[in-house]
Amino acid sequence: MPNRKGRRLFGSIRQEASGRWMVRVPIPDSGGKTRSIGTFATKRAAEDALAIEHGSIATGTWVDPNRGSELLGQYAATFVATNGYRERSLALNERLLAEWIDTTHFLTVGGSRHAIGLGMRSLSSLTTQDIRLWHAAVTAESRRRAVQRLERTAKHPKAVNKAVRAWAQGAGIAVAATGRIPTTVLSKWEAAGGRKALAPDIPPTAGATEAAQAYRLLHAVLARARRDGLIKENPAAIEGAGSVATLERRPASIPELRVAAGAMTARYRAAVWVAAMTSIRSGELFALRRSDWDPQRHTLRIERSVELETSDDDFGQVKASASLRTVVVPKIAATALEEHLEQFTAKAPRSLIFTTSTGGIVYPSRVGKQWARARSAAGREDLHWHDLRHTGQSLAAAAGAGIKDLQARAGHSTTTAAIRYLHQVQDSDRRVATALDELVAREDQSGEDS
Image 1 (tube, helix red, strand yellow):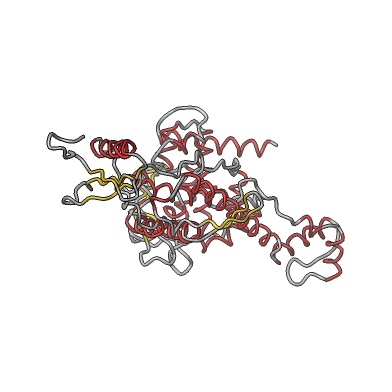
Image 2 (cartoon, rainbow, N blue to C red):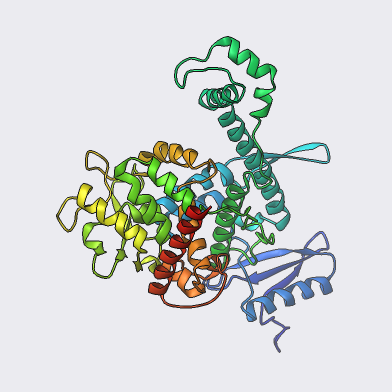
């Protein structure tokens, strides 16, 4: 609106030689600089545009169109580097950024193949449709890679030899437990459809976790950009894209745990029981020191975690503040732990409870092969080491643990994960440990009676 002298209080409108009306507006906090917001066919349209611009500045909703010009890839790299991630999470997010955001992927839509790359796009140019197409491409590529890995594993010579020997034993054909399998036996196995039987079962969620992780990173980056005032809205708004409908994982039973623990070398048997009965993470387990164990109260203090094998540091802080905790250890695991301490752990208070035969840190790769043999002996090829944590939570829930018990025992920051394991609500961590001992005794008694 013009003042009494005919000058506008905000911005200016000027007719060009072409007859169109140009609108210029002041740039907030720029020391009097102005910018054009375009030309319009009529003066009324120009005045309307000027009024809208004035309103957005007055209400605090205005966003500088020059902001958000930074490339997503550059902004995301800064986000990942400065977000305070711990080493494992930092490595994961750096990989996700490189593989899924900075890399161009392809998606076929309506018979046409589209190249979809977000890393070189400016923040302000991204739309919800862009994110949908990207997510579809990432989901498809992630699944393709997962299926490829499963098929490659199924065709590995070790997998083939194991399948041939199992088939030969069932067919009454004598084959040595080790060494080269005779060609005649291989031919018979193939003729019986053995190679076709090796085709892996492809779960419907194959690759879904990787895609969800990539989406969560992108969403977090764009949420930060929105808070920084670089974009008006977060275009990563696909409902459910950051989560995975995981298939139910079957926990180990007590008899299965006994077989698996027994199949491990003596140095690592107690680790199986402690992991399964306390629900602690593998990194927390192998960072335990003698001083963390209280033999009178049967408790373990969780304060640190093993870092990546490639890290400059051996140990780091636990995953979150909720992970700093003291866990009561059920008798079956406490007994195994006491025996282990006596036989394998050095006497100094700061000595690691679990070490390699040379006294080194136990990284996941160090127990991987042993655990593969142990779970095979228990008839649970599907049982990953991390499933021992799941087993501990499931057993605790069956023993009567409530939401808060499960959350505290596992060191979770929220109740979301704990709710999955809940059967009935009670309290007291010590009662949970006692109930676990009773559950083990009942299952053992049941096994003896059958």
